[in-house]
Image 1 (cartoon, rainbow, N blue to C red):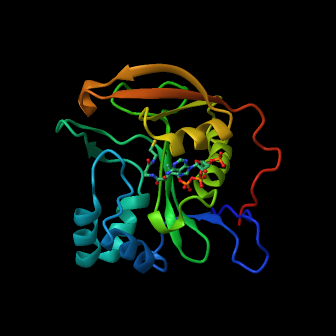
Image 2: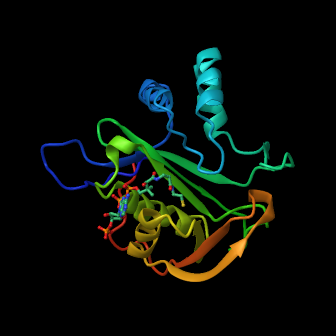
Length: 203
Ligand SMILES: CC(C)(COP(=O)(O)OP(=O)(O)OC[C@H]1O[C@@H](n2cnc3c(N)ncnc32)[C@H](O)[C@@H]1OP(=O)(O)O)[C@@H](O)C(=O)NCCC(=O)NCCS
C-alpha cells in the first residue's frame, strides 16, 4: 500500500509514505551513512548498514516481515507486535515512521513506548514532513482497529511535541519506564474519531 498526499508545491514530487523497498534502499543506506538512525531508543545505523551490505533483500524482508522477536535495551527478547512501517519520501529519502499495536485492544504491553515512532533525516526537517506523516499513519491506526493511540516523547523534544499536538494529541501523563533508563517521558493520546475524512489514496 502506498500513501499519496501532496505536501504542497506542484513542481515537486509529492510527499508520500512508501513501504521499504530494494529500489529505494540506496537512499535509505545513504541516510544511515550520515549517522541517522530510524530507531530513537537505540542507534541502529551501523548494524543496519552491515546487514544491508551482507544481503539487501534479506534486510528489506526483515523490515517488513511480521512476527518474530525483538531485543529490548535491557536484553529481554519479546515477541514483535503487528506493525506497519513506512519510509517518508519526497523524491528523496526523508525519514521513517512506524505503527505497532496489539490486535483487539488499544492497550500496549509495558515494554512498548507508544504506538507510533518517527524520525526525519536532518536535511529534511522543518518542512512539515513529520506532522504530515503522523497524520497519514493515523489513518492506518484506525484501519487496524485502534480507537486511540499513545505517543511518547521526551520533555525537551519540542519538535516532536508540536508534531503530536498538531495531530490532536493531548498530554495525559508523565512516566518513567525503567527498561529505557531513568528519564521521564511524556505520554500523549490521540483519539482517532473518523480519520477517513480527507484520507490518503491507496495504490
Ligand atoms: C521530531 C522530528 C521527527 C520532527 O520532524 P520535522 O519533520 O522537522 O517536524 P515538522 O517539520 O513537522 O515540525 C513540527 C513542528 O515542530 C517545529 N520544530 C521542528 N523542529 C524544531 C526544533 N528543532 N525546535 C523547535 N521547533 C521545531 C516546527 O516548526 C513545527 O512547528 P509548527 O507545528 O508550530 O509549525 C525530527 O526533529 C526528528 O527526527 N528528530 C529526531 C528523532 C525524534 O526525536 N523523533 C521523535 C521521537 S518521539
